[in-house]
Image (cartoon, rainbow, N blue to C red; front, side, top):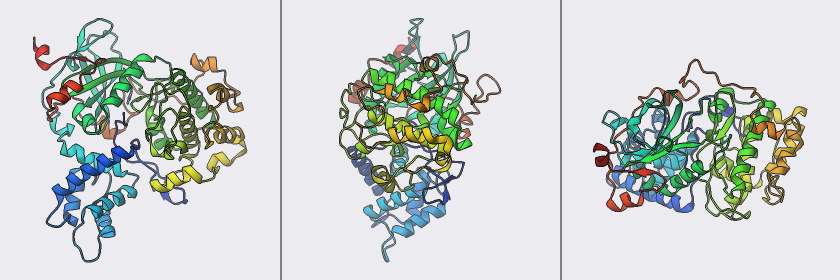
Length: 493
Ligand code: ADE
């Protein structure tokens, strides 16, 4: 599945590639395939028709469009939108034709690391009338689910909804507690709106996520505890990771120490090794999907982009992932395999030490060009003698030829684990969590959500009614076997 979340604002200023201070990307959505991009452009055409006034879109129309899709204030200022309009307007024309409108969207996207995809997705959400805020006060139309332990059917009403942890185009993640659980274990409930998933053709990804999260139980992967659905929504109830995302900590602390990164890398290696051993490629390793528990140990989440049955180095073909972390073979459409995860791990390692990914550029096309051609340069702490072995493992992981990449040989992850960068760690002890993480996420009390973005945690935690109706064919096609299903009426019996 595409990342659930929309972009957040990057708080800590970071050094851009040209040395200027500026914000790097905010919360990053996964890149899209050419086909999905065509769908996005089609959606934008519909929006163009809606905001068009006479021959095209006026400056006021563009501002209204941006206000209605929550781009202004949250992401951009009105002045930036006006500037984008002025930049792409041709000659004396006072309105934007479709091409110019599209160009304006791209210009706005390049301003602050908001992607073109984000803009279109936010706007189409609005079109779908799926804004959660507007419907939060309605009663919950709960479906039934199955508590696999007690064999009791579950509904959203069986959970106390405590806090919002994250929100995005498809739905949201909330901190919840099963009411019947006397121990009061905290869990994370991810709810996804089927209409939004259908619109973006993401239903299959959600099913993949459910299957993988349910099948593979591992100390460094977020496990699925329950899955259920209503006519309108899918619910995934997961282990709660109270330490928040690595993304959140990188924003706050900018860089991590070598020891800290080493343990994260070791834990990630074991998590990816477990997925690869089942011929699953994760394909969405990034700081947003790397969560910490309250002891500071890490787990990977969000398996929506994962691909099963990938045996060879070229077993997968879809262009997917998140721009910063895309391996060269994905960009070149050469077919890809497990190696893309090792490339992404190298990218994330570099980012955790330096503060920015190795080939970062605010302009996505330039970043892609860098990934394909730019010489790997050692910046900030990475240039110091302390990081000699880090440079070596990074050069191995960020090797552009997947077969020669560290982890890409016949020994797979064993070559990574044997690298001198990990010499101070025993991987059996890593697996048993016998090392005390250097950084322990602070919490003041049980259920303290201060390790999550305030943008979300200050919102009211509630399930919401979906206002969009699904066609019968969509209702049928979204009845997933792995999610228990019922109609609202059944629940009333
Ligand atoms: N955000 C997404 N998944 C999460 C989880 N399992 N725990 C905490 N926050 C999350």
